Image (tube, rainbow, N blue to C red; front, side, top):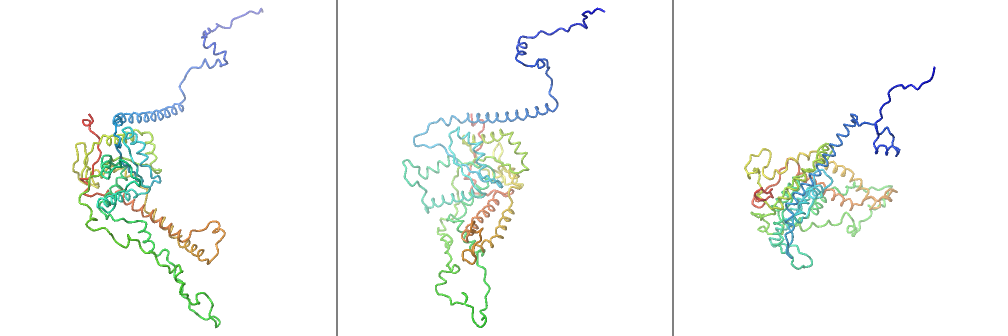
Length: 480
């Protein structure tokens, strides 16, 4: 059988290659890569890409909105920064108060909120500011009360106003300083700051304006509670041992000058002048005023600090919704810059768009004292007085042993151990100072918690109704 070239089948027509493909094949790219057809990813890849893309897109959208909101409000007030000032004029200045959030070790969270969300608009309007924070709960209330008492003493002529040690030209007078404070305003970040501010305000205008050193008063109180008293030594009957008295130190005749150098016979320090005399201020000057002068206008800025494992969902929601905080802070700063004010709504009233109306109290105080009231629900579990009681009990349980060791080493009744040589234990003086410091902190925390705790009403005095005002959002007709 002769061999013949027999075609097994029709030849497949080859698709002509384009110039680009032909050139890329010579670069070493496998030809199979050019023959692949696009297809949808697998189910798992689709889930991953859709979720990731949605999260990233939502984050980018939120931050873009934040920039637009800041730019919008900054453009509304930036014309005020271009107004020229005189050579002796000062820019408008506000005072910012931020109290410590209950249960949070970072005492600066309130002011961080101000710097991030409120400050940019004030900077765009060339408004100066001074920030005041409280390191522990109640510190802000004590500071405000002391400042008001100092002002009352200056007005009564009992104290000179604070002045610079070196007289400066064009130094503002006391009236000019107070006028600038009224033109500036006060920023209160959060409901807890409002409560401390109102507590200090009432104490400052109600209590005696006599100076009182809280640390000195507490030191005298602690000195008389018997914690550091010497234990009574048992009385030893002077018996004769083997017909002869024991030549011990207790049987020797006492020296007349021994009591002068005995630490147990040292005269106790005399109480301070503030404790000896109740008050050296005449009664007619120390009487609280019936009318309170006009106070700087208040700006109430809502603020909630989420702490704790149970509030992690709120933290995540806040991370992806920063625009709401930016809008709230920018709106508050804009109302301050535009100086649109209204009277402070007294208790048993409510603030609506049409004005201030009466309301029926139903567990609330009403008016501006109910500002940001839902924020108190996040105090739960933040701090409990039992924590302080537990720390106090633990400290006082170990105090007698520390005190006995300090006295034994000071009197030389026993030799120090190797560990005590390398790490000397605290002396009695150091233990007294440590106890005073701890009691100051514990009592301050308890007093501060009583001010800001959930359900505790904010302090109020009827005299505040005519002295306080609040910055309010300008209406459209006022802006135009």
